[in-house]
Length: 221
Length: 266
Image (cartoon, rainbow over all chains, first blue to last red; front, side, top):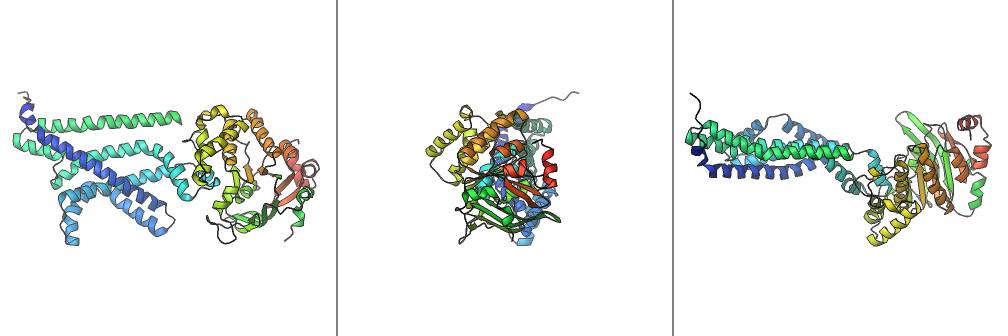
């Protein structure tokens, strides 16, 4: 017997999908913003001449890049409270983990961008008497910014999808809502198809944008 | 320290004035490789000094030590009698590299223009960001400089759209916009196609006529002989010969220098 599609019974919960999508956006944007700040701090930490600073930054990067986000989430939500004796709300744990995870990847993207700028640029800037700070902010970072943009967008696309993992600690974002609707309607095919489509509709333009930026940069080089 | 060896005849022209840059006992090593074993050199106000020598002899390293892009291993550099110190800020009577580089500009072999800025922005960047001069004033001066290097029509172009010779002329204008007392030119024509060398040398010639103090590392022997007041030949980690262009290039004393020059048919 062929499957009989029934989107109507699922779509009556459109408000749950809408709310889930909104939360997914909120966690994505929030963790990208905080992640960028962390990423810059860790990036400069790694570039620091002080061994302790660069070593600690490196350690941070490796811990968050070499363990799965899902494990980090559960560790911070379930395990960390046992260590510090304070319970952590699920939305705090979600935001915190997503940001820390994003920060570890962004920091490497930023560092790669900064190191990719030709030494001649730094020298030319120094030769017109710029301070190290001016060299960095006026000459190196503006050029590095353009260069890391495609990787940055790609990582942010991953970040958007990664928010689906916070459903395991019951944060009501989009993937969580799909499970809820499925529970109400017993229509997993429709519920999860709609959610998959929603992710795709948001992210497809993003990857197109990344390709476009990358292509344009290749032309201007 | 034996300084007498380097005070060739040409320096006598500016006898009364103290040198604007003095180098004493300069040494530079990279790990075990010793580039300089002790270089002494004076650069006088209004003088054009050409530095020549075989590749790998450290000509570029020497000129890059003069604005501390390269930090000497030992020895002393003084600007206007003030000791140059390896820190950004000046301290006491000494001069830090931040202040030094306001007075001693540099032009590089590979131009190193800022690709994210237009020609105009490249030239104005230093005076505005570092010297904190008013934009209108700086832009007026930049236009003047662009006129001088013959690139008025390129003011809004990005470096990627310029030829090598044009890039180098912009780089010279960028250095001049800081109104330096000394200009260091590090093989500024070596990366250029042969047909573009002339336009850059012409600009340098004009600067020399205007009395700009310059230290020029170059492989253009004819140009060095023509434009330089003095020529220094670096070999074996020291300044092996120094004197007027006539003496050094046209009547070389040592066999090493003769052999070196013979490759240029100068």
